[in-house]
Image (cartoon, one colour):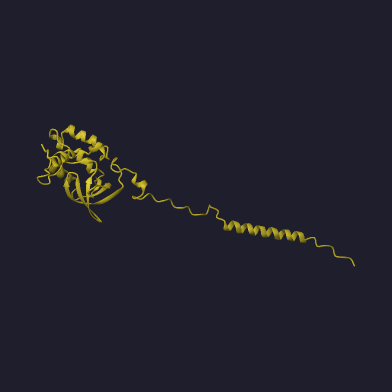
Length: 221
């Protein structure tokens, strides 16, 4: 009996099946793998907040040195030409204005005040009393006061305005240890040249010298 000839289409069928399987596998892989073109674009990162280091590095108010923290509130008391009380949401804060020193108010017979102390206080009160301001603060002093630059709503520094008007000195005591705002000495020179405020008097005494000579050494002449 003659044997049947082998079926020659089997190899072709097998190759076709293998090709179909490979094509299907490739389609599945492409479907599972992100293409990158259809992914939604990630939103840009938000700008740095006020508490971030990059935001704090910007110096506000025309070069006033940036602080380490800010306080915002209403000025409810002006004690003298460089000290105020700010009512903030978390309570009242006593603020010593940075980089300036104003004539001393009197504190009884043992600590007499300086000439122009009241004029300096009134000038500062005219700038900040009852107003909402931002205090750009650097530290707290030994008395627990926040040491700050007072920034008015128009962006000006009340600290600078006190010196510019001749109602405070640039605080250059101790070789400038208290002088963060380097604009102050030039503002003082301008006020002195124009004879404004306390510079209308001959040879006014610096407050830090007054505190030492008069209050501690009892040499108030």
